[in-house]
Amino acid sequence: MIDDKATSQKTDKSKKTFTILTLLTIAMLLPGICTNGTAGSGEAAEKFDRSQSMLINLKSAPMSAGYFIIHSYSASKVMARDLDKALNQVVEVDKTYAKSRHKPDNRYLENACLKITVARQTAEQLKFQLSDAYSELKDSIEETMVTDSNFH
Image 1 (cartoon, one colour):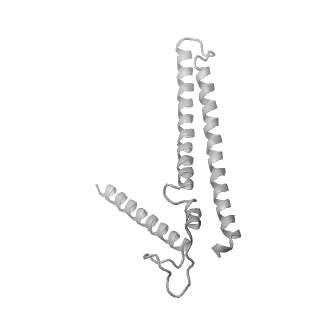
Image 2 (tube, helix red, strand yellow; image 1 turned 90 degrees about the horizontal axis):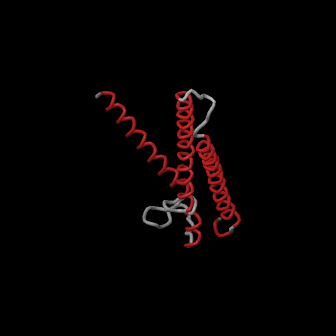
Image 3 (cartoon, rainbow, N blue to C red; image 1 turned 180 degrees about the horizontal axis):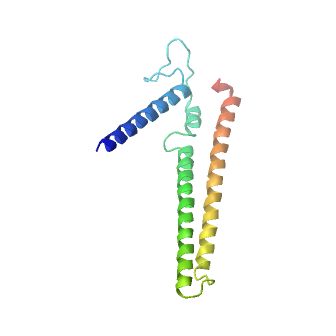
């Protein structure tokens, strides 16, 4: 019971830390903007037009292209891991079955293993493509912001 409580407290503390770091990151990305949407005192904050805000939010805002790419990347990692597990199970069952039939060199499930291997390789390629797509999106947004004189 004590261990569960300590683990729960550590989890709560890590959640609070993550939330604070997220809020600090957002505050750093949008300097000079108050919660009421007006410019902060002391510094003249630029107000972005709709297209500029859309561009800024495209990278990581909830339900944005960047969000969906990151979510898909996570799913592809899980997919690749699960296909590895599936392949290992099929190989082990195939070996066991062949031994039980006194034909240890036969592979009864070889075609299934080949299909799973191809699927795993495809999942790895997808993971790489999604990572590359997100990097390209992020770099393109940053380059656009740097070259656009209205962002300065």
